Amino acid sequence: MTLALALTAFSPAGIGKIAVFLLMLSILVVLHEYGHFIIARRNGVRVNDFAVGFGPTLVKWTSPRSGTNYRINVLPLGGYCAMQGEDGKTNEAEQQREFRAAPTASDDNFQAKRPLQRLAIVVAGPIANFLVALVLLFAIGLLFGIPDTKVAMVGAVVPGSPAERAGLRTNDRITTVDGQPVANAASVVETIHNSAGKTLRIGYDRAGVPGELTVVPVSSMDPVAHRNLGHIGFRPQTAIRRVGPIEAGIESWNGFTTMFVATFGGLAGLVTHPTTAFGQLSGPIGIARVSGEVQDLGIAAYLSLAATLSVSLGFFNLLPIPALDGGRAIFILFEMVRGKPVDPEKEALVHVGGFALLISLMLFVTYHDIANIVAGKSAL
Image (cartoon, rainbow, N blue to C red):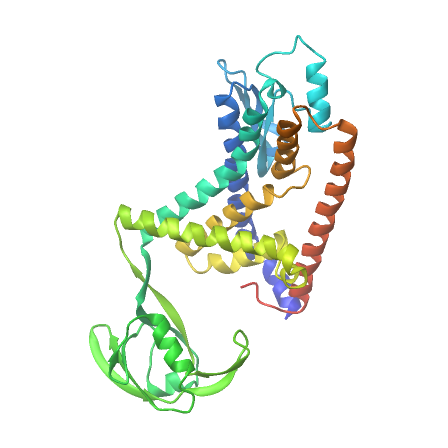
């Protein structure tokens, strides 16, 4: 099983899926950096370089108005926004101290801006990721439709299951259960779960033709509920309803808030329930595996995954860890409270500790991803 998974990853199809995943992730990172770029320029900060990718430059164009070098580099994995006043070598407080000691420094320097302006520039990247997720969800709703929870559709039917033996087929729409009209998909699942060993009369619609069948749910242990529930052997399928811009906007906002709260809850769980939460973390390897499986589900599902990753990327960068946007924001907030930057030496110590924590976290999630592959666990 494990060898088969490894061989699949290096097949032409597997390499293609990895390439699509890297492209999607790179676009999200570039849009993150573009958030920094926009707010930096709006606040009069010179952006020396805005690059797509890393490594040697393939194509470069210098704006005659702003002086920004727009680059496309060899390795198309993300990008960066290099502002005047950021050398990438010293910490924020050290750069502030150097700027204040150089009265001839230009006003278009990042360090010349008020703390509130610098804070806005720093958090603009994560906010851009949140906006990207919202736009993606809106596009999904407008182009592909929204889930219709009032319709109970039959998805994949398990071969040899009670559902198959009774005659239930994929794409059937369940309309009644024991003569009662179906209120929503969740009520059908709940009724089946609570009816182990009982005969149910299922009314259905198959391509416009009504019908009815009887089926007896079998009792089995549910791995999520951790108790015996009734099952007949089919996977519910989400019905899709086409909507206009207003309803798509409402649905996209609801979907975004759900992702936002779930991601925040997951990160909070690292503090409140670390044992459980750390076991659910996925790194680049795990996310790439999920991406490969979701690509088989269609464009809408993949765009939804991209929206989820964009929210996660925004939250990750807001973590109060040095080298991330959240870490930089914390030091700027301290500066706003104290009226002066944090001592460079103290910030350097925090940077060392934060960097060690970040590396430890990345090593852990990578180990976790590899262990799941070795164990043959599904990515979804």
